[in-house]
Figure (cartoon, helix red, strand yellow):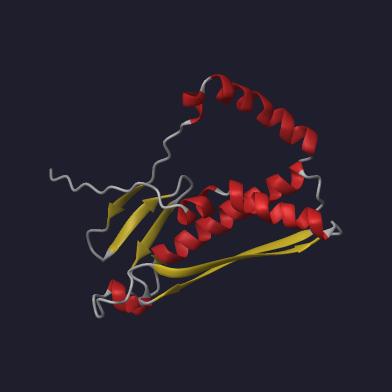
Length: 169
C-alpha cells in the first residue's frame, strides 16, 4: 500500500470522525471461557481459540499460552502495524523490519511470595530493527509517531480507567 491508497482509505473516516466524534468511539471486546478441566481459559481470537494457562514460572506446563506473552504479542502486532502505517504516510520505504518486545516480571508478586514484588511487568522494552535508506531525521519522526499512535503502547503508557465485576449466575 502506498501513501495515496492509505489516504484514500482513511480520509473519509477522518472526515466522519471530525464531523461526528462519537462515531470514532468503538468498543472492542474479548471473550474467554474457563476450562472446566484445567487452570486455563479459552480465549476467542476471532480466528481460532487460544488456550491460555499458567506460565511455567507459576506452575504451568508451558503447553498453554501465557497471558503475559500475549500482552507483549499484542504490543508487537500493534506497534508493527502502526510503524508500517506511519512509514507509508511519511513515504519511508522499509525493506525489512522486525519488532520486538520484552518485559520483566517478578513472579514472586503473582504468587504472593513477596509483598514488595509487583504483580505485573515492571519494565517493557519495545524495539524496531529496520532496513531502510531513509535519513535519520525521518526515522526519528517515524519512531516518535509510532509511539504516539500505537494503541497498545499508549494504553500501557497512560493507564486507562479499569474496573472489574464478578457476576454470579
